[in-house]
Length: 100
Image (cartoon, rainbow, N blue to C red; front, top):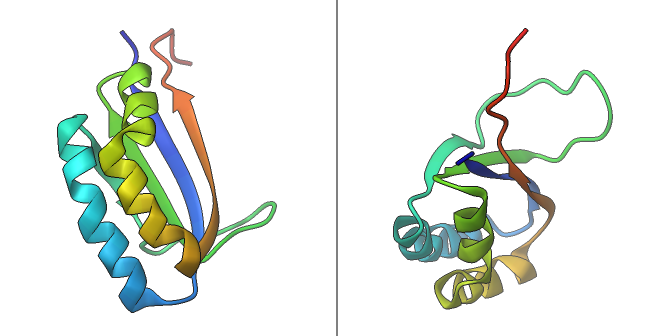
């Protein structure tokens, strides 16, 4: 079973209020086995558009990643995020095939 990932790019307009979202999403992430691989941090953007904050979250499966997003716990958390940020989120299945 391949892992699932959330890849998010976010601009935050109210960092204090956004921190409430970060605290609130912890329950959903625990419930679905999430592991935060990237949360903000230094980055370069050599091609295309960017946002000020990047996030990559790993889940044990693609289905767990989908289920977390649709869970009641995460729905409550994202209600805190929407008014104080704008961004892009993709939920993607990992790759387990041959490597170069």
